[in-house]
Length: 285
Length: 311
Image (tube, rainbow over all chains, first blue to last red):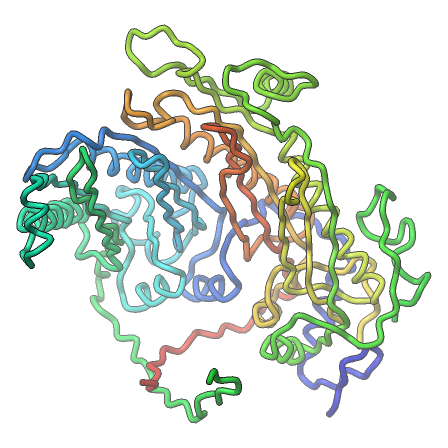
């Protein structure tokens, strides 16, 4: 069976006439029957979600923004207003997207894009965008209505695995902490050029920031009644300028519940690819 | 095949209603495409052949790309500038919101005052640029007798050295099903060849591209500017992002409404567009594929979990 590139050649394909039926459908005008769904899912993601019983509803978004005085940090002390400003920007975006989900009568939002923009340096704008979905196991879970819609940054592929493994997404949880450290004196700075020594104040600040942030995230997860947090993204940013000496630490993850049946094995098949690695045709040198 | 005189004539080309510009039809000697080998194979499995790489472009002067510094708040001539934007937004009933000085007990002056105003004029010129590029791409597909165009990509660039002008470009590969009669208006989709195959397997056919643009002009007040005299949460930037995205989503849904049951593959882009000092246009762009169900009993294919034994 041969088909060349040009038009006017017989189709010849057996068992593949779907495309003909599909093109025929385009010849008649479309009559809208209710609201169209709008999603940023690829076809593969749409399939993965439909397989576990979720249908897309609409694209939903949320945004939050806050600024802070960066210079007011004390050595060894948590800078509450700075950390609080970051947390409030993210929490506002999360609340905004959750309320859009509720307004549409959807159960949650998956594959959420979470973006943080720092401009200027002492301001943070957080935006979220994802596809609201309806149905699936989360909907039937007792108490899910009381807890409100779920949010997750897990991709459709990860979300599919999570649900098939017997878990449910509860929502994104975050922990933020900013801890100050003492500035080095001029002689210390000069001495440090010669010696290899640990900057203990900064290490300590990093450790306390991490503990504070992880504790805050755990508290948020507990308030959702979650069994754990997955896919935590940790970002750490030291700020050491003339006026400001602090470590800023942020943790964002998805809190999950274990379903009534507990963990369900995905029973993966081992797959051994029999092809050789592609030959390198053009190599340098 | 399309030869001279067989291209998109007046009234034949879909959507190009201005008649201001029409590309000269050219003879094509061999089919061209920008498909990868895997994409071409996926399309071939569905029964489609590539018939040509098609494109459409338009160079536009963007209206109301406010020129000069609007700091100080004086309206410039011809409805351009701060005052013009505010009054035209108010007159048309579109979104406008004031954000007064956030300092306690201060007398507000121009440096502290801020506002958001929907820039419908800039949104309309961007939409028009993309629409022209897409309709010209579609005309080329009509000229080739194609059933559709897959892998449509849209791009946009400012012309270097010419403020306020922009080039819109749409490219894709026209495809044909040899067994079917030509469509008067070939479908366009931004889905790749592989995703096209999956879509057909799921029981959907792409009906066309859906598009949405939203623009909000942001003149930040002292709080939203993030200066060092007043800090805290601000509502101005979230509101601008929310309205710009909301408008893009609305337009995306309304352009898709007459085409199909839903929209997939939406590519989103948010950016701060055309900045003037501390103010900017908050832009949201959305491009997706409207899909139509052609059969209801699509076979379920539960994906199988695998562990690859590659090192």
